[in-house]
Image: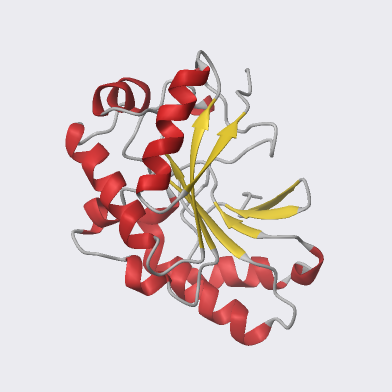
Length: 205
């Protein structure tokens, strides 16, 4: 049975794809892991259809979670249209639905060749974007995006645009090997784009 949704610290995480356009140096996927501290096996036999994902979510007691998070073992923005559809379905069907968040690398507009941020309005409460560095060079070294520096620029642009449509836009950095000065540079950049910075603890293998 493949894992479409899984619980972690009171939130429900939704795993829609294993596709990703990055190869982040700290990603658990590199080291032969099929899962993480969150769930044992997050490799999907196939990408669940919209309806499969909806059925999985509606079988949960959704109001009991503090948040519904589109995340998983891949970049959820590959399925941004399906996420928007699911958000509409859940909002229409589930009284007391908790806030909806997307954890993303911020490459949605690059992936789809269009600006998807207006579609997030009224559907998504929080977008959390992996910043991973205060300069293009640092970002590319850590994130190893398929599109190189273009991906860095796309991520910054996505963050700025998302801030116009989504109530909470957060950028994150992992604290591994970072000085306070590094963190401050990242914080300044996030605030300049209309986002807040969250520093995440590194999770070793």
